[in-house]
Length: 114
Length: 113
Image (cartoon, rainbow over all chains, first blue to last red; front, top):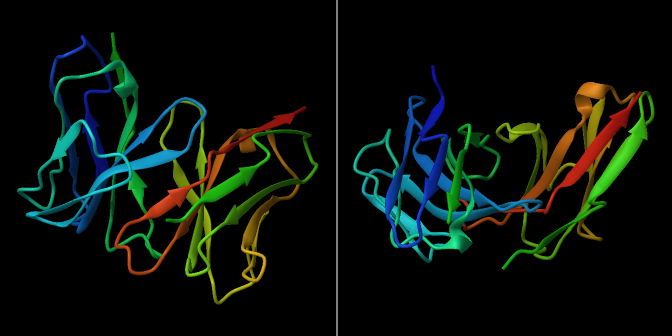
């Protein structure tokens, strides 16, 4: 199993541009998440999904959108990129919710908005 | 909502010494507390976790303790080794929220020779 795979690993965006971070998992996990990690900070939940066709906002959803058309894929869309969105983005998945179920993270996507 | 505070933000220990990282949480309903290790430039990985019906859990050189009354939990690493150098995050989960893990801000542990 590849686990959680996210692309791209690095990206520089100009202010106002849009892009999609791709995420796929091959563990047949129901739950998928997008976190952002600012330098020296913890992980903040952007959006999550409990299954195909179901998404919900996390702590910091503004400026982002997600979709979950399949169990495997959970892309994160940034519309009108802003410098405040410069961060490391982690996609993650778990078999069920966070309570007692290991969350597996992807390798991260380093995004810089200039 | 839940708030998790983590201390210290940086910790330097000599190889072979013990390291302790402490977290406090605000929501008494939280019942699951994982710890993640993140090496430089890598993804966070679960190293140990504890549920609220348990006071202590050990896995080789790593242990976690939980004090529900005081709402704090701690990570203990004994006989530290250079490969323990990393950022450690605690987290808390409140039931009824499908995925809401609230993370602490992290502790950078440096194990020196």
